[in-house]
Length: 176
Image 1 (tube, rainbow, N blue to C red):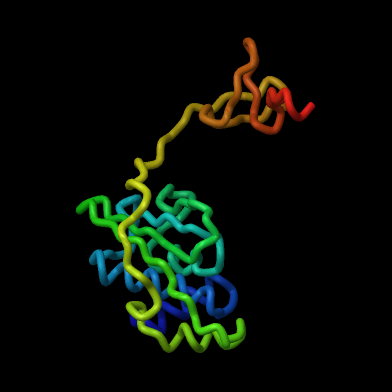
Image 2 (cartoon, one colour):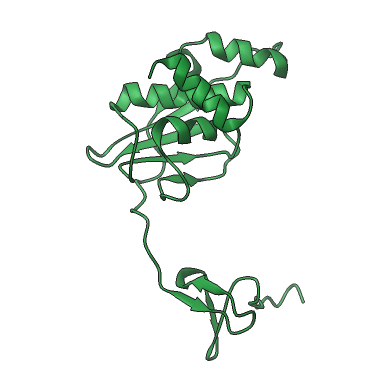
């Protein structure tokens, strides 16, 4: 698939073309170049996005990272930064978007980012977070209050009762 077809696939998935989608598109392409990556059918490539903006959609399309597979994680800092990990080699890279010129409007940012090469858009840094473990499978239990099934890692125990997070009454002496 050539780059135009790949871009079109990202736009189809995201719903429109924009500067934010371009950021994720170029980050994914740059990660492919730096770490010799290909589409991840399982969890061999991991992306930790520091935002939940448009660019994350391009990462999903290009690299196969997704929340459901457990290889797309969010470490919300509000930064346009993406950490990519290659499990087979242990290699990783953190790509941080460089500032755009102050005079460029939101509308003009699409054209600006489209014309830049990935190496001119991102600072390449060491990852801050270690490679996350592979996704676990948890036993599920029924909440004793609402009757809904919940994975064990999200349950809370109070006495002999199991509660989901929606039903659990958090103990907090300062906010009664």
